Length: 232
Image 1 (spheres, rainbow, N blue to C red):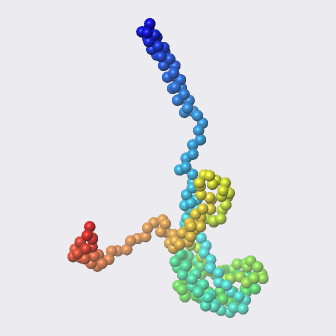
Image 2 (image 1 turned 60 degrees about the vertical axis):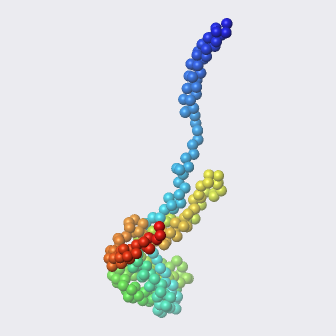
Image 3 (image 1 turned 45 degrees about the horizontal axis):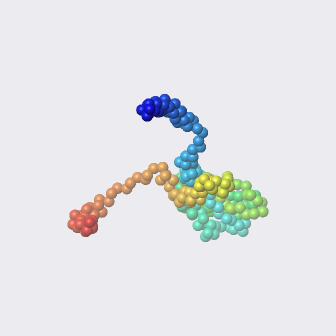
């Protein structure tokens, strides 16, 4: 009796094994169709350098020279402003320089007189006279003195405007993501420190090697190389 029962139990297990295996396989296949939410952190654009890139483009640079209605010539501070504009022009540009005189302001007469002196200083600072353009602009108010404006365009590294708060900073705090304006000011300050925007595009050419200095270093190494390398 025991032998028959054992044989019967083994046969029953074999018959049950087929349906159980099929059911397990079906469960595995169906689990692949389940709707799951995957959060891929690497795809979130959370790099402030990407959100606030430094862009090289043409930009107008302006320098205002304040003039009062009683002025008849440039003061020392005015001259320094003009020379500062000239220095920036030589560093950044080589095209036209526009000297803008305000119209419709109380100091129109004084500005028109002093503008000629501004041109003379620019020429004395090696700005070609044929690159200087005299023009005018409408003063924003007929009751307020407007400055003489020196303007030129140059290739400049800059970022977009800061202060964009498109969403509540605390709305997505649980996602541990940077807010929209994060990193904008640091990128803006970095761009302002770049004197030659071309350095961001291509390296500068290398100067020639100082053969005399190289020979002196080689001779010093030959004479006392162990001391130069240290005890190691």
